[in-house]
Image (cartoon, rainbow, N blue to C red):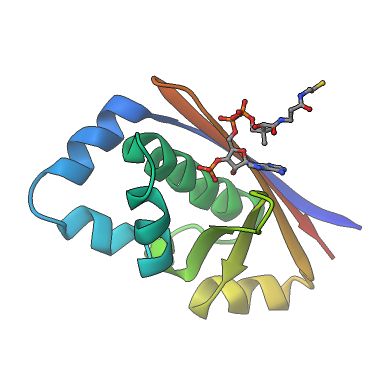
Length: 125
Ligand SMILES: CC(C)(COP(=O)(O)OP(=O)(O)OC[C@H]1O[C@@H](n2cnc3c(N)ncnc32)[C@H](O)[C@@H]1OP(=O)(O)O)[C@@H](O)C(=O)NCCC(=O)NCCS
């Protein structure tokens, strides 16, 4: 059973500016070490960071009742299977919310160009 869906867009240029300055503050506030390592291996890291940012937002949108309860960035990790398929892992408050709503699996899909990144999320119960 589908329990929720979410979608989000992120401009790559804005992400590029955020990940370049100042220091690594933004990157470390929003992304987990595995995500940072993955994006760092890519020729255009900002595209991959932007897609992960959009995916986190999409998951938050899909989870009901997330408004006003603080930052979820590091409670949602977007990684890749060996074949490249993205997967979302939930921790902390995001996992608690998902468990409370009966979510058993989170599906995400990512796409990115030089300018824009987008992601969708589907929660299965
Ligand atoms: C995997 C594939 C779909 C990615 O598409 P793309 O247009 O090159 O790139 P996009 O920007 O749209 O998508 C990239 C994202 O796809 C996701 N992805 C990679 N492999 C995937 C797979 N096997 N399944 C689902 N998603 C995949 C990743 O999340 C990737 O972003 P990330 O590296 O930041 O995590 C593509 O490379 C591919 O292999 N297509 C199959 C080719 C084919 O058969 N084409 C004929 C279609 S009729």
